[in-house]
Image 1 (cartoon, helix red, strand yellow):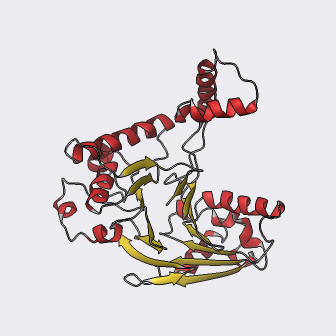
Image 2 (cartoon, one colour):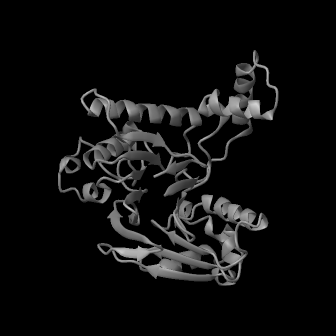
Image 3 (cartoon, one colour):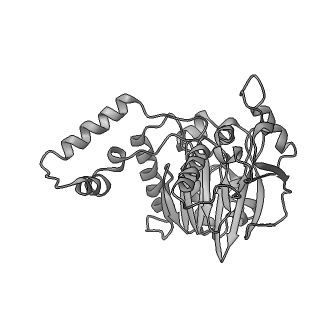
Length: 328
């Protein structure tokens, strides 16, 4: 099972600026001043292996969209702007003869309907192709209505009804387990304005949990220490936990309490208690630069060590970026 991140920013797309691009180029040129490159492959290797991540790459700008790869059908979490890139990639596979022109099945699981989680759907090219099947799953009762409103005037010129694929909306119920495309799937209600839901995907002995736009308190709040906190069971022994850690600790506690997002402190505390194997921070703050996100990741890893009595902990911790792929 592989997990591919098409979009990782929260709240709104955060395009990289020309000034930031120039700064990256200057740093790359300085790092390469004493180097000799025989061919393009040498350059690619230098960028990949020797430049810092914040110079050679970027955490990205797309809003949430995550693909779980295991089978012919697509399993997709959320429909942010990353969904557009997923759709474009699918079309390229068709051009290359690696994907059939129609008849593909896209299963999209929607956490909630804030724009950053659905704004990519009107630009999802496969939804305009007759013969394709798009199945949109969620726990909110008016599932179809939210998607229709997004594409109604004056917000968008092309109505949902103009999309030519076979699009169906399936409302799920919390507390039940569903079998969809070979996965056992369940959900949990999360604290977030308007209510969001997390998803747990299980297949072939592997578990991926997608839990974004959820506010969890840290150890300063007694509820986070309770052993019957429902998210501990929902996260329990996940091979991969994708966790909303949009804020640093100061923001989560002092200035953005009850805004509906969590911090890396809550991520570490809950993941350790639930015996998660791999924690991936997600829903990156759009105002954070690549450098600040790097600091956030380092702070998370340091806090894990502190939380574990200053001893190394086996749980892997990283931070999602557009184009990141994880083997689960």
